[in-house]
Length: 170
Image 1 (spheres, rainbow, N blue to C red):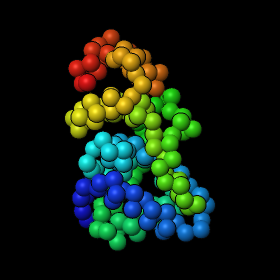
Image 2 (image 1 turned 45 degrees about the vertical axis):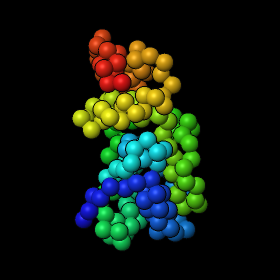
Image 3 (image 1 turned 60 degrees about the vertical axis):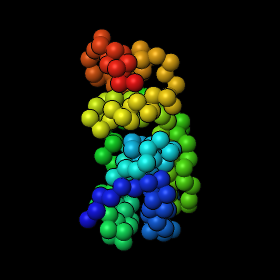
Image 4 (image 1 turned 180 degrees about the vertical axis):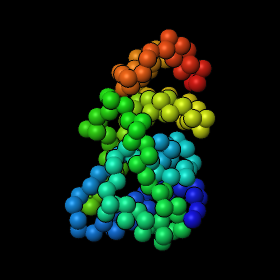
């Protein structure tokens, strides 16, 4: 199975196909974050998967698998691997609707929250995304972002150098 790059048009078409595969079952919503969100917003060319913070139930997982099979995609091209990175301050009501269909509503997480998630993950691949995201966040200073980070992840011990680290990233 391929993990080919998925651009915004690919992602949108695939998510619509997942919706079609769900049929007339219960309505679901997913919150898209990460590289897929950046691609959908035109801030990145492509991504290899679509991350959501929403748990994926068995019916949705089956629909995703059918779409993956039809397009030769990796089975988890749409996954809930971002769920553990969700900040405590996340509010789904602040998300914007990207796709609104009876079977599936796709929501875009706010850039501030995605910035915090990528900062929490702090993988090498996140550095470029953090830099791009910064321009679209409401944080006025790295100190404000660091403060928001610790509100979002209150279980973490505060690091006095976080604001300087953010300043270095952006």
